[in-house]
Length: 444
Image (cartoon, rainbow, N blue to C red; front, side, top):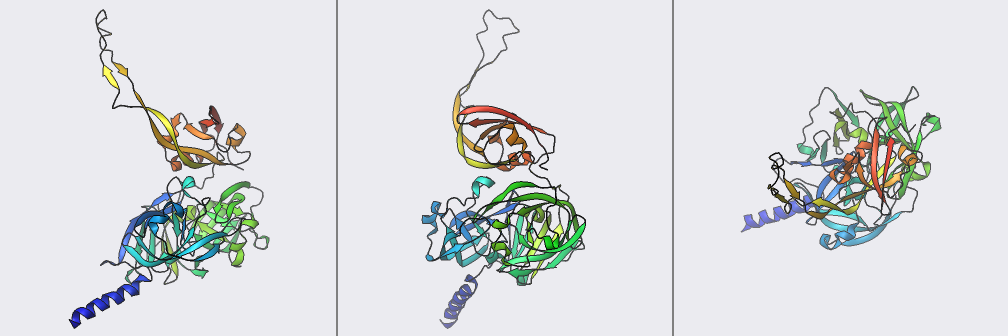
């Protein structure tokens, strides 16, 4: 009996030991998980208390968050512990969040038996309409601190490995950088070229942002947009909408990797007050830059490595239409019902041989639910704005093709097409169907 009792006790202690953090209880101590890359953001499958959800993988967050949780609250069976207030980008007020303890989280074969979450019950914080897929939460530091995380943007998978089992394979064209941490967030030192001047800067690595670079204006360092810029909506943070200027920098360097004519956003100072608490921070390095590399994050050893991939030479483009789309539920669409339509040959009496081969189709129709896409933001004086389009317009067709045939991402990509291309939109506004046409133009 003693050996059996010892074995059971050992198993129990082992479970207690690894249950406080993420572990991978398989022989390889590693697992590969496919992800969706949408608008330069990584969406991974996460199971919380047995409920299958989708999370944004975000190196820029120190606390895991679940939002719009009222949809699944009963299934998640949260154990509420405390209430806190979270502050993020935006010029609004802090957001109330309820801490939930001892949640079981699985990502592939990776598991944590005692994960804390911060549940936000504010329905305005919903990423799904802007991304076109359900997103139930955000996870970052808690996963990265326990595991070595390899992100393969080109093949759309992440590989999670327990650090002691990860074998780093140095490659000739891989750049390895030291990570610095502030409030559990990772920073690296890189260089940016503005108006011919190379400037050393420190950036937060923010995989939860879709832009390439965000920079904080700083006259002492000559970090500013110059004369060529345009005002735009930059995104929605925890504390509200973020606006600012968009421009380009001459160049950006991660050690020996150099990119030219890189998109950059300069957020309004009122939106980034909290971000500037780290006095050494000059901005963020985000998804449209990160996706050009396959990246290995090794928080336990304090480094990150970059290896360029097939996205590296992709041109940095801006939205040339001025339209920001959002998924807005569903709409009824009339379609031919092939299963009930009738095909028959006509009465051939008193008809010529030439007409005797005619086939008559008696079409029957059905109404089906299809995704609806609306204009959520519209840049002032953009081609779409000047053409007469408005926020709230429901887009029915683009270039004579029904929008329900496309994903939100596919439609958005058309707005980033080459300058000079004409787009034709059929829209519905207050029950009236209207047609618009405009030519894509550079925003500055």
